[in-house]
Amino acid sequence: MRLIPFPVIARVLKRRLPTTLWGRSLLIIVLPILIMQGAVTWAFFDLHWQTVTARLSEGLAGDVAWAAESYREDPTPANLAAIADQGERSMQLSIAMRPGATLPGPARRGPIGVIDRALEGALASRLDQPFWFNTTRYPAYVDIQVQQPDGVMRIIAPRERAVATQAHIFVLWLMVATVLLMGVAILFIRNQVRAIERLAEAAEAFGRGEMSPRFKPHGAKEVRQAAVAFLAMRDRIQRHIEQRTALLASVSHDLRTPLTRLRLELALAPAFKRSSAMKGDLDEMEHMIDEYLAFAKGEAGEPTQAVDVAALLKAAGEDVKRAGAEVEIAAPDTLTASLRPMAFKRALTNLAGNAAAHGEHVRLTARALTSGGFEIAVEDDGPGIPDDMHEEAFRPFSRLDASRNQNRKGVGLGLAIARDVARGHGGDITLARSELGGLRALIRLPG
Image (tube, rainbow, N blue to C red; front, side):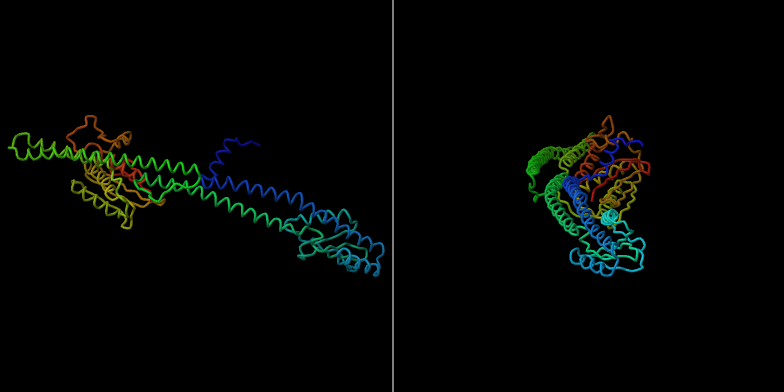
């Protein structure tokens, strides 16, 4: 027989074992308890209960042999009466004769068979005559019959004379103790794991831009230390975001002032040859400032609320129509999601705007996922993006153009902002080839 390598067994066990901390902790505590209680139960039945049962069966078999031998030596009614009287008074045996009878057929054995095996071995070692017994006919008694020359001697003995009947009490107490120990272990494990789960939930919520004001460190000392470190890190990151947003807002305000003066001076100046080009440069600079600020801010402070996904697609579809492209929308009317509306609308508008800029036909679809959450696909029939440049397209300021042609509107932040918003909601954006022939941007968010 070929032995299975240990690494293979280890991999199989690893796939079968629980993957959560709750399941593994429960396994660490409960499995030893079950093994210990199983070993104690086995030792009790094998070393104590079976030994006691065998000794009791041997004692009962000796009394049965005494009664059978005494009657065989003097098979008279008077001797039978004396044997029955002594058996009733001294041995708790009910003895009677069935003249001319023979032993019954095979009797039904008990479900475990320990009592039957012990009693059969004891009777076989003590009796020379054929015998028959039944331990299941009467709940409190054992029926034993011994073949005699003139009939069958029937002996009814109390069940406790053949088996230790109090063994179930031990098993019952053992089960109760096991349940109590497991209950206490489960309660303590659950409290410890719950602290870690709350820490993970708070970290995940912060990753989506949500604050958890009710979160407080609790649990074991190590878990509280991790929670305190997380809160300190969250405060530092939040301060950094607020400082960055305030700085860019100030820069944006400071830049808009001279831009406004230039625009006003250009409007008041006499018409000249380069006036239209200068106005275009001013528009481009103002658009660049807006995109920089939108990318840095990310709408992280916006609260989440229930949003109609179909309405968002219809609004994005209107922008596509204004850009001069045809649009096709398919979304269930009942699909709602918890989103930051302005941020998600900006991401969807960026994707739809890119599709309208590179294609003539745009398709916007949304559907709920069976595993929870939903996904939105934005497709176009444009030239698309090579597969090896999909990740490059998400990099800030990347326009997939080595010359960075400034005659094209935008600074390469559209896809970067969209992915930043999607990841801020706990999801992501992936690019692929569309059935329409162009690019397919897929937004997938959890429920």
